[in-house]
Length: 145
Ligand SMILES: [Zn+2]
Image (cartoon, rainbow, N blue to C red; front, side, top):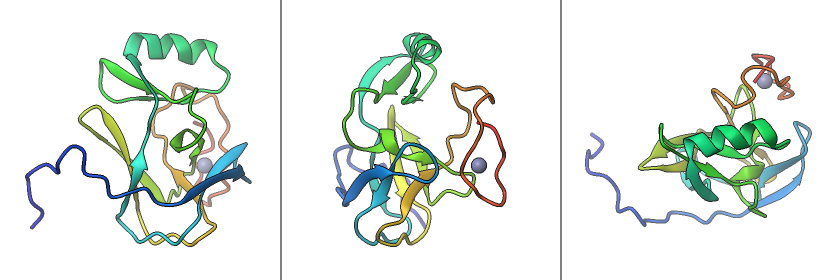
């Protein structure tokens, strides 16, 4: 029975070793630099905290969008980040998932991930509003983001 108590807000079960490098999916991707067990928290989406309104404005004007809306008021823009989850690519069959918790966006592994595997998550609804072609190569690809 999982505890209903929330974890201490600054409990950090990462860092795990990750590297950014060219991806077969899109641009630069984020890769596991060590084997990762299933269901492990591997980090958070870090960046500038902005209003949802500002997020929508930026999404219209930026070529590379790296924004996660954490609720209907706030969003995190990782465009200025040099490392981390701004590089995680979308896959229709991802190996991690993002969980929004108290205005933060946490990443967990969905299954065991081998060293060298690209980390992916399902972006869900995006600021591209179904206009960006998906290149994840999954057999169950939904085609557009
Ligand atoms: Zn896809």
